[in-house]
Each structure stands twice: as C-alpha cells, then as structure tokens.
Image (cartoon, rainbow, N blue to C red; front, side, top):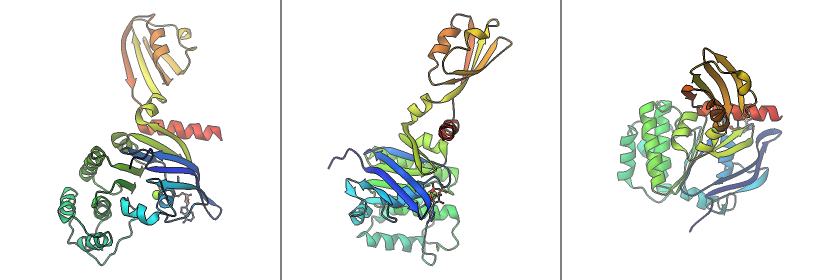
Length: 301
Ligand SMILES: Nc1ncnc2c1ncn2[C@@H]1O[C@H](COP(=O)(O)OP(=O)(O)OP(=O)(O)O)[C@@H](O)[C@H]1O
Ligand SMILES: [Mg+2]
C-alpha cells in the first residue's frame, strides 16, 4: 500500500500536568527517508516518540503511523515498527540471547541468521548476561532488537548513545542499507554531525516546539557562513556595507572578512569590481546552523 507519509502528526501536544512536553507538533515523515529529529536535552524528542507509539497519550492533537491512528491501532503499529528506547529498560538477569529470543517469540519467531549477522557487525556478545554490560553494549543489544525483524519503519531514540566510533560507523552503514531497501527511519539525536551524515531531512525541536523542518541542503543555504576575500589591493568598505545579508565587514591588509546570511551572489558580484586573488569560505557546521535557529527562536520570543 502506498502512503504519502509514514508518520504524520497534527497539532500533537503533550502536557505532563503543567509541564510542557510538546506543543502543537506537525510532522510528516515520507516513505523511504531518513528523518532526523534534532533537539537539545528536554526539547521533546522522547515525548514525541512515546506519543507515536501510544506509550503516553497526547493532551491534544493526533498522530498516524502507516495511516493508522496511533491510539486505536497501536498493536498493529508496534508489530510493524522497530523501536529503540532512549532509556533502554532491559531484563538484567537474562543474557542478550535470551532477551532477543523472548522478544522474537513475542513477534512470532526470528531469523537467527540475521540476528547473528547483526551481533557480529556490532561486536555484541549475545551469551553475556545483561547485568554488567556497559552502556554501549546495552545500546548494541537495543539496536539489534530494533533491526532484527527488518521492520518497514524504525523509530530510534538517540541510537548512537554510548557507541564507540567504529560501531557508530557500522550503524550508519546499516541505516544506508535500510534506506536502500526502501524502509523508513525516524531517529532522534542531539549530535549534529551525525544527522548531517545520514539524514535526508531534519526537524529541529526546541522547548516542545518544532522550529523548522528542512532538507540538509536547505538548512545550509539559509545559514550563516564566514567568508574571506583576498583582493590585489585594498577595497573601500562602503562598496560592501549596503549589500543585503552581509554583516560584520572588516578589511585589513587587502583581505575582507565578513559573515553572509543566505546567498553569496550579491557579495561575489560586488567583489568582481576589484581584482580578487582568493576566496575562502568557511562552511557552517550543522552546529552553527542549529545555533542560528535557536538564536532566531530566542529573538522571536
Ligand atoms: N514523565 C514526565 N513528567 C513530567 N515532565 C516530563 C516527563 N517526561 C518528560 N517531561 C518533560 O517534558 C519535556 C520534554 O522531555 P523529553 O524527554 O521529551 O525531551 P528529550 O528531547 O527527549 O530530551 P533528552 O535529549 O534529554 O532525551 C522536558 O521538559 C521534560 O522535563
Ligand atoms: Mg529523550
């Protein structure tokens, strides 16, 4: 069955008593995309995810997963979703293998060949007891149980929490394979370079409100970047100060430095009146983009 959105929320709002969790979140996750849900601690990522899976009930608004109502069809939704909990609750007395067998049986069986392949990729020692596993090793087990049924949608709350760089890399590869297989991923994170690496689109959430949803490219094009233009001779500042989007101009030793918001076009054309020796552009990191949105949201208050 084709869907135009695998996840859709409309006006999704959750208050914990008087404490705001999320406020009127409107989200659409398309089939086959890797959607990153970015926000700092306490932004509302886990609240959104728990509402989608009907672990908590929204105060207002609604959500659908596979066009099914999150509250009325939670059993079917759970069956079709692989879920990684941010605060993994595991059964300490079991071994990893016991736990996977138990969870597999709840779903009507497991492909152990695939489970073992995942365990090998993540260097996860399945016969070990869960009690005594490090945070990262518990997280690997959490990832295996999320992926082991090859579900059509993965909802992953801070999936790389505690993973070392090698295992993180393995996880990113698995995400790429998942996408190539036409499956959909919704992952929360506060790690920006990771989202930049693996996601198609990003929703930024802050203090319970969805600030923006953009493709990674658009996010960058809206953003602020630092530029250095090296001229053959000194240039007059007044030729540059009136250019829209250009800020913090400084000219020293034939080098103009400035900050540009959005397109570089007007600045490049103004510079072309003079002899340009070199242009150095400092690409904004997602971290800086993130801060720009945060600052914008702060100013809007
Ligand atoms: N059970 C609860 N009772 C009261 N307030 C809660 C509860 N769960 C979450 N909150 C509040 O809701 C807001 C959103 O929390 P949430 O856990 O969704 O954030 P998060 O983005 O997942 O943060 P983190 O990155 O720390 O995991 C926070 O202000 C939090 O304190
Ligand atoms: Mg959380």
